[in-house]
Length: 157
Length: 93
Image (cartoon, rainbow over all chains, first blue to last red; front, top):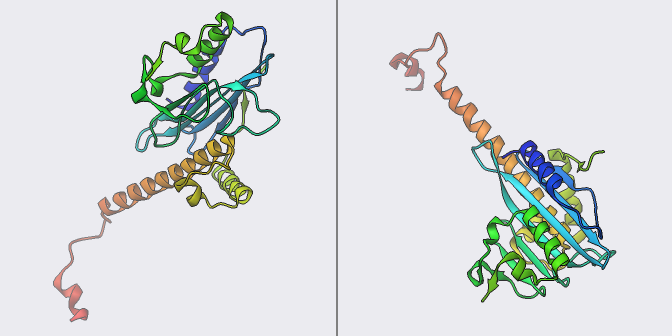
């Protein structure tokens, strides 16, 4: 994948996404990085009227020797909005699935303290969680009031 | 209406951003990369790692390019070149 195909896919997914009435989204911010067009960052925030928000970030990086990029880092966060303070790792969180460079993905659920690795999570492949699937899951959780783990179909040991 | 905000960065801008982050947290990029730094905000951690990766990728591409150039040079044969003869080494005796 390169930046143009990522943007095209993003635009298509956004077009299919039904926006909840109580949600206001900032414009997604793309920052293409060298080497173009195989490295880029995305940051995107969506806010709800009840003070919760979604913060999504992705970083794609070039695969050496190939004209292709892969997702190196991502963070999909849902919880109380800390604004105007800067978001910190210690902020309260309902759910955050994230992956730091070179490390396996993990999850935080109902609190920032516990790093829950894939070995403790069944029913959800953390590495493969896509941005728009995360958004749809949170929207569904908010509209149905079903617990997040039920909506996403995972259990934690 | 454009739903996206798109800001491409050059290698020079990536270097400038790295310097700004180092100054903001009084921390070298190497120390940031190799340690846990709870004082660095989530957004800055994300950007810092991405900029470091970008720098590494650009360096890797330059190395690959240079290696390919050297390999090309070593395979080239100049039109009037030929194997070395013993006479050509006589001055070194």
